[in-house]
Image: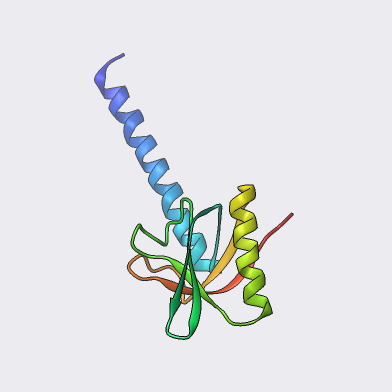
Length: 117
């Protein structure tokens, strides 16, 4: 096999893989939801709030320095924390919606957590 067909195949694969990554971010920006397995849970007291920070595996919207978060303040947010713990322990997907959306450079508050069974 010559070098030209290999380079052509490499370029096509590169464009395909770039398209997949771009589609994930575009899909998030369109509907505001991210689905994934829990990578890390980080509870922290901030002033009088009990805040839960977390990350999802493969999340295109967060890096190693930023998190999704919510404050534990009522029965619903306590249920969210339980859902996170259960999803992490069972290695199952959860779906979240952030506010305002997908910013890699800062931690963002979530507005919803869903889990399908």
